[in-house]
Length: 332
Image (cartoon, rainbow, N blue to C red; front, side, top):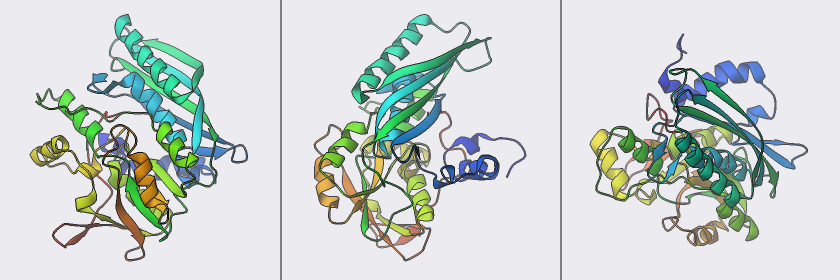
Protein backbone atom coordinates (compact mmCIF):
# COMPACT_ATOMS: atom_id res chain seq x y z
CA UNK A 1 0.00 0.00 0.00
CA UNK A 2 1.18 3.56 -0.73
CA UNK A 3 2.73 5.70 2.03
CA UNK A 4 0.36 8.58 1.33
CA UNK A 5 -3.33 8.59 0.42
CA UNK A 6 -4.16 8.83 -3.29
CA UNK A 7 -7.41 9.60 -5.09
CA UNK A 8 -7.46 6.03 -6.37
CA UNK A 9 -7.97 4.85 -2.79
CA UNK A 10 -11.40 6.47 -2.77
CA UNK A 11 -12.69 4.92 -5.99
CA UNK A 12 -14.57 1.96 -4.51
CA UNK A 13 -12.27 -0.44 -6.32
CA UNK A 14 -9.11 -2.41 -5.61
CA UNK A 15 -7.12 0.37 -3.94
CA UNK A 16 -10.09 1.39 -1.81
CA UNK A 17 -10.59 -2.20 -0.64
CA UNK A 18 -6.91 -2.44 0.28
CA UNK A 19 -7.07 0.79 2.31
CA UNK A 20 -10.14 -0.39 4.21
CA UNK A 21 -8.80 -3.86 4.94
CA UNK A 22 -5.25 -2.88 5.90
CA UNK A 23 -6.05 0.22 7.96
CA UNK A 24 -9.64 0.35 9.18
CA UNK A 25 -10.57 -3.34 9.37
CA UNK A 26 -7.21 -4.04 11.01
CA UNK A 27 -7.99 -1.57 13.80
CA UNK A 28 -11.74 -2.06 14.19
CA UNK A 29 -12.14 -5.77 13.38
CA UNK A 30 -15.30 -7.40 14.73
CA UNK A 31 -17.76 -9.98 13.43
CA UNK A 32 -20.34 -7.38 12.32
CA UNK A 33 -17.87 -5.22 10.41
CA UNK A 34 -16.21 -8.23 8.77
CA UNK A 35 -19.46 -9.20 7.02
CA UNK A 36 -18.80 -6.24 4.67
CA UNK A 37 -22.46 -5.54 3.99
CA UNK A 38 -24.02 -2.27 2.83
CA UNK A 39 -25.33 -1.79 6.38
CA UNK A 40 -24.62 -3.40 9.73
CA UNK A 41 -27.33 -5.64 11.14
CA UNK A 42 -27.61 -4.94 14.87
CA UNK A 43 -29.92 -5.30 17.86
CA UNK A 44 -30.63 -8.99 17.40
CA UNK A 45 -31.20 -8.63 13.67
CA UNK A 46 -34.01 -6.12 14.10
CA UNK A 47 -32.18 -2.99 12.93
CA UNK A 48 -29.89 -1.97 10.05
CA UNK A 49 -27.32 0.79 10.64
CA UNK A 50 -25.27 2.68 8.03
CA UNK A 51 -23.33 5.89 7.48
CA UNK A 52 -21.97 7.70 4.42
CA UNK A 53 -20.30 10.99 3.52
CA UNK A 54 -20.89 12.96 0.33
CA UNK A 55 -18.46 15.31 -1.40
CA UNK A 56 -19.68 15.23 -5.00
CA UNK A 57 -18.51 17.83 -7.50
CA UNK A 58 -20.42 19.57 -9.00
CA UNK A 59 -23.04 19.92 -6.26
CA UNK A 60 -25.90 20.21 -8.76
CA UNK A 61 -26.06 17.95 -11.81
CA UNK A 62 -28.69 16.56 -14.21
CA UNK A 63 -31.08 14.36 -12.25
CA UNK A 64 -30.09 15.25 -8.70
CA UNK A 65 -27.88 17.24 -6.34
CA UNK A 66 -25.74 16.52 -3.28
CA UNK A 67 -28.80 16.71 -1.00
CA UNK A 68 -30.80 14.05 -2.81
CA UNK A 69 -27.63 11.99 -3.12
CA UNK A 70 -26.98 12.14 0.64
CA UNK A 71 -30.42 10.82 1.57
CA UNK A 72 -30.60 8.24 -1.22
CA UNK A 73 -27.12 6.95 -0.45
CA UNK A 74 -27.81 6.10 3.18
CA UNK A 75 -31.43 5.01 2.73
CA UNK A 76 -30.42 2.74 -0.14
CA UNK A 77 -27.75 1.07 1.97
CA UNK A 78 -30.43 0.26 4.54
CA UNK A 79 -32.83 -0.98 1.86
CA UNK A 80 -30.16 -3.35 0.52
CA UNK A 81 -30.38 -5.22 3.82
CA UNK A 82 -34.15 -5.57 3.58
CA UNK A 83 -34.72 -2.67 5.96
CA UNK A 84 -37.13 0.25 5.83
CA UNK A 85 -35.31 3.55 6.48
CA UNK A 86 -36.61 5.21 9.64
CA UNK A 87 -34.22 7.66 11.28
CA UNK A 88 -31.32 9.68 9.87
CA UNK A 89 -28.75 12.07 11.24
CA UNK A 90 -27.41 14.87 9.06
CA UNK A 91 -24.04 16.55 9.57
CA UNK A 92 -22.77 19.27 7.25
CA UNK A 93 -19.45 21.05 6.87
CA UNK A 94 -20.00 24.31 5.00
CA UNK A 95 -17.36 26.58 3.51
CA UNK A 96 -17.51 30.25 4.47
CA UNK A 97 -19.21 32.21 1.68
CA UNK A 98 -21.47 29.38 0.53
CA UNK A 99 -24.77 30.81 -0.83
CA UNK A 100 -27.72 30.35 1.52
CA UNK A 101 -29.98 29.95 -1.52
CA UNK A 102 -27.98 26.89 -2.62
CA UNK A 103 -28.08 25.46 0.91
CA UNK A 104 -31.86 25.84 1.02
CA UNK A 105 -32.16 24.10 -2.37
CA UNK A 106 -30.05 21.20 -1.11
CA UNK A 107 -32.13 20.87 2.07
CA UNK A 108 -35.37 20.88 0.05
CA UNK A 109 -34.03 17.99 -2.03
CA UNK A 110 -33.21 16.10 1.16
CA UNK A 111 -36.69 16.72 2.59
CA UNK A 112 -38.39 15.41 -0.56
CA UNK A 113 -36.34 12.22 -0.58
CA UNK A 114 -36.87 11.63 3.15
CA UNK A 115 -40.61 11.75 2.59
CA UNK A 116 -40.35 9.21 -0.21
CA UNK A 117 -38.54 6.82 2.14
CA UNK A 118 -40.80 7.47 5.11
CA UNK A 119 -37.78 8.58 7.14
CA UNK A 120 -37.00 11.62 9.31
CA UNK A 121 -33.86 13.47 10.38
CA UNK A 122 -33.69 13.27 14.18
CA UNK A 123 -30.23 14.68 14.92
CA UNK A 124 -27.45 16.58 13.24
CA UNK A 125 -24.46 18.88 13.38
CA UNK A 126 -23.33 21.95 11.44
CA UNK A 127 -19.82 23.30 11.06
CA UNK A 128 -18.76 26.39 9.10
CA UNK A 129 -15.08 26.48 8.16
CA UNK A 130 -12.85 29.16 6.56
CA UNK A 131 -12.68 29.51 2.78
CA UNK A 132 -10.57 26.79 1.21
CA UNK A 133 -10.96 24.33 4.09
CA UNK A 134 -13.53 22.28 2.16
CA UNK A 135 -14.93 22.43 -1.35
CA UNK A 136 -18.22 24.29 -0.75
CA UNK A 137 -20.12 21.69 1.31
CA UNK A 138 -19.65 18.15 2.60
CA UNK A 139 -22.58 16.15 4.00
CA UNK A 140 -22.65 13.06 6.22
CA UNK A 141 -25.82 11.05 6.79
CA UNK A 142 -26.23 8.12 9.16
CA UNK A 143 -29.35 5.98 9.10
CA UNK A 144 -31.21 3.38 11.11
CA UNK A 145 -33.78 1.13 9.46
CA UNK A 146 -36.23 -1.52 10.60
CA UNK A 147 -35.36 -4.92 9.10
CA UNK A 148 -38.41 -6.29 7.28
CA UNK A 149 -36.72 -9.42 5.92
CA UNK A 150 -33.93 -11.13 7.84
CA UNK A 151 -31.14 -13.15 6.26
CA UNK A 152 -30.36 -11.03 3.19
CA UNK A 153 -26.58 -11.22 2.91
CA UNK A 154 -23.86 -11.13 0.27
CA UNK A 155 -22.16 -13.92 2.21
CA UNK A 156 -24.90 -16.44 1.36
CA UNK A 157 -24.84 -16.55 -2.47
CA UNK A 158 -24.90 -20.04 -4.01
CA UNK A 159 -25.40 -21.75 -7.36
CA UNK A 160 -29.13 -21.66 -6.67
CA UNK A 161 -29.07 -17.94 -7.46
CA UNK A 162 -29.20 -15.85 -10.62
CA UNK A 163 -27.75 -12.33 -10.89
CA UNK A 164 -30.01 -9.41 -11.87
CA UNK A 165 -29.80 -5.66 -12.28
CA UNK A 166 -32.79 -3.36 -11.90
CA UNK A 167 -31.89 -0.93 -14.72
CA UNK A 168 -29.15 0.29 -17.07
CA UNK A 169 -25.67 0.90 -15.71
CA UNK A 170 -23.27 3.81 -15.39
CA UNK A 171 -25.60 6.80 -15.72
CA UNK A 172 -24.43 8.55 -12.55
CA UNK A 173 -20.72 8.28 -13.24
CA UNK A 174 -21.13 9.36 -16.85
CA UNK A 175 -23.36 12.30 -15.87
CA UNK A 176 -20.94 13.55 -13.21
CA UNK A 177 -18.02 13.32 -15.61
CA UNK A 178 -19.88 15.21 -18.34
CA UNK A 179 -21.01 17.91 -15.89
CA UNK A 180 -17.56 18.32 -14.35
CA UNK A 181 -15.78 18.56 -17.67
CA UNK A 182 -18.47 20.81 -19.25
CA UNK A 183 -19.11 18.29 -22.00
CA UNK A 184 -22.10 19.61 -23.94
CA UNK A 185 -24.19 16.56 -24.78
CA UNK A 186 -27.30 16.77 -26.92
CA UNK A 187 -28.99 13.98 -25.02
CA UNK A 188 -31.22 13.21 -22.06
CA UNK A 189 -28.40 11.67 -20.00
CA UNK A 190 -28.90 12.21 -16.29
CA UNK A 191 -27.94 10.59 -13.01
CA UNK A 192 -29.90 7.51 -11.96
CA UNK A 193 -29.96 8.83 -8.37
CA UNK A 194 -33.13 7.45 -6.77
CA UNK A 195 -34.46 5.92 -3.57
CA UNK A 196 -34.55 2.14 -3.93
CA UNK A 197 -36.66 1.17 -0.94
CA UNK A 198 -39.94 1.19 -2.93
CA UNK A 199 -38.47 -1.40 -5.33
CA UNK A 200 -37.14 -3.55 -2.50
CA UNK A 201 -40.46 -3.31 -0.66
CA UNK A 202 -42.32 -4.53 -3.76
CA UNK A 203 -40.03 -7.58 -3.94
CA UNK A 204 -40.49 -8.30 -0.25
CA UNK A 205 -44.28 -7.92 -0.48
CA UNK A 206 -44.27 -10.47 -3.32
CA UNK A 207 -42.26 -12.87 -1.13
CA UNK A 208 -39.41 -13.03 -3.65
CA UNK A 209 -36.58 -15.28 -2.46
CA UNK A 210 -33.84 -12.65 -2.11
CA UNK A 211 -30.35 -13.86 -1.28
CA UNK A 212 -28.42 -10.58 -1.61
CA UNK A 213 -28.82 -6.97 -2.73
CA UNK A 214 -26.18 -4.29 -3.29
CA UNK A 215 -26.41 -0.83 -4.81
CA UNK A 216 -23.64 -0.42 -7.36
CA UNK A 217 -22.15 2.92 -6.29
CA UNK A 218 -18.38 3.53 -6.42
CA UNK A 219 -16.75 0.90 -8.60
CA UNK A 220 -20.07 0.07 -10.24
CA UNK A 221 -21.45 -3.37 -11.01
CA UNK A 222 -17.93 -4.75 -11.45
CA UNK A 223 -17.00 -3.94 -7.85
CA UNK A 224 -20.22 -5.48 -6.51
CA UNK A 225 -19.80 -8.74 -8.40
CA UNK A 226 -16.17 -9.11 -7.36
CA UNK A 227 -16.98 -8.43 -3.72
CA UNK A 228 -19.78 -11.01 -3.85
CA UNK A 229 -17.63 -13.67 -5.49
CA UNK A 230 -15.06 -13.34 -2.71
CA UNK A 231 -17.51 -13.04 0.17
CA UNK A 232 -19.46 -16.15 -0.86
CA UNK A 233 -16.49 -18.04 -2.40
CA UNK A 234 -18.24 -18.52 -5.73
CA UNK A 235 -17.71 -17.73 -9.39
CA UNK A 236 -20.12 -15.30 -11.03
CA UNK A 237 -20.54 -15.49 -14.80
CA UNK A 238 -22.24 -12.58 -16.57
CA UNK A 239 -23.31 -12.18 -20.18
CA UNK A 240 -21.96 -8.99 -21.74
CA UNK A 241 -24.84 -8.65 -24.21
CA UNK A 242 -27.37 -8.82 -21.36
CA UNK A 243 -25.81 -6.00 -19.33
CA UNK A 244 -28.01 -2.95 -20.05
CA UNK A 245 -26.17 0.24 -20.98
CA UNK A 246 -27.74 3.33 -22.59
CA UNK A 247 -26.45 4.71 -25.87
CA UNK A 248 -25.35 7.90 -24.09
CA UNK A 249 -23.25 6.02 -21.52
CA UNK A 250 -21.85 3.76 -24.23
CA UNK A 251 -20.82 6.85 -26.19
CA UNK A 252 -18.91 8.33 -23.24
CA UNK A 253 -17.26 4.97 -22.53
CA UNK A 254 -16.13 4.55 -26.13
CA UNK A 255 -14.89 8.13 -26.31
CA UNK A 256 -12.89 8.04 -23.08
CA UNK A 257 -12.01 4.37 -22.63
CA UNK A 258 -14.26 3.73 -19.63
CA UNK A 259 -16.03 0.45 -18.91
CA UNK A 260 -19.72 0.91 -18.17
CA UNK A 261 -19.73 -1.87 -15.58
CA UNK A 262 -17.12 0.06 -13.57
CA UNK A 263 -18.95 3.40 -13.60
CA UNK A 264 -20.75 4.58 -10.47
CA UNK A 265 -24.50 4.35 -10.01
CA UNK A 266 -26.88 5.82 -7.44
CA UNK A 267 -30.13 4.12 -8.42
CA UNK A 268 -28.92 0.87 -9.93
CA UNK A 269 -28.63 -2.21 -7.76
CA UNK A 270 -27.55 -5.80 -8.22
CA UNK A 271 -29.66 -8.69 -6.97
CA UNK A 272 -28.91 -12.34 -6.25
CA UNK A 273 -32.30 -14.06 -6.52
CA UNK A 274 -33.18 -17.73 -6.22
CA UNK A 275 -33.62 -19.27 -9.68
CA UNK A 276 -37.26 -20.06 -8.97
CA UNK A 277 -38.13 -16.38 -8.44
CA UNK A 278 -35.75 -14.57 -10.81
CA UNK A 279 -38.20 -14.09 -13.69
CA UNK A 280 -40.93 -12.88 -11.34
CA UNK A 281 -38.48 -10.42 -9.74
CA UNK A 282 -37.73 -8.95 -13.19
CA UNK A 283 -41.45 -8.52 -13.86
CA UNK A 284 -41.92 -6.65 -10.57
CA UNK A 285 -38.94 -4.37 -11.16
CA UNK A 286 -40.19 -3.48 -14.64
CA UNK A 287 -43.32 -1.93 -13.12
CA UNK A 288 -41.14 0.92 -11.84
CA UNK A 289 -40.18 4.01 -13.81
CA UNK A 290 -36.67 3.77 -15.31
CA UNK A 291 -36.54 0.00 -14.70
CA UNK A 292 -37.76 -1.13 -18.12
CA UNK A 293 -34.33 -2.72 -18.69
CA UNK A 294 -34.38 -4.83 -15.52
CA UNK A 295 -32.92 -8.19 -16.51
CA UNK A 296 -31.03 -11.33 -15.55
CA UNK A 297 -27.37 -10.77 -16.42
CA UNK A 298 -25.66 -13.86 -15.05
CA UNK A 299 -25.44 -16.97 -12.92
CA UNK A 300 -23.40 -18.41 -10.07
CA UNK A 301 -21.01 -21.29 -10.85
CA UNK A 302 -17.88 -22.96 -9.49
CA UNK A 303 -15.76 -22.41 -12.63
CA UNK A 304 -13.22 -20.04 -11.04
CA UNK A 305 -13.92 -19.44 -7.37
CA UNK A 306 -13.76 -15.82 -6.20
CA UNK A 307 -13.65 -14.58 -9.80
CA UNK A 308 -16.10 -12.85 -12.13
CA UNK A 309 -16.19 -14.07 -15.74
CA UNK A 310 -17.55 -11.92 -18.56
CA UNK A 311 -18.90 -13.92 -21.51
CA UNK A 312 -18.78 -11.76 -24.63
CA UNK A 313 -21.21 -11.82 -27.52
CA UNK A 314 -18.32 -13.14 -29.64
CA UNK A 315 -18.08 -16.32 -27.61
CA UNK A 316 -14.92 -15.30 -25.75
CA UNK A 317 -14.42 -15.11 -21.98
CA UNK A 318 -12.40 -12.80 -19.77
CA UNK A 319 -12.18 -11.94 -16.10
CA UNK A 320 -14.14 -8.86 -15.09
CA UNK A 321 -11.78 -7.52 -12.46
CA UNK A 322 -12.30 -5.12 -9.58
CA UNK A 323 -11.80 -1.58 -10.95
CA UNK A 324 -8.46 0.03 -10.16
CA UNK A 325 -6.82 3.41 -10.60
CA UNK A 326 -8.48 6.81 -10.57
CA UNK A 327 -11.90 6.26 -12.10
CA UNK A 328 -14.17 9.24 -11.45
CA UNK A 329 -13.17 10.97 -8.20
CA UNK A 330 -15.84 12.85 -6.27
CA UNK A 331 -18.85 11.01 -7.74
CA UNK A 332 -20.59 10.81 -4.36
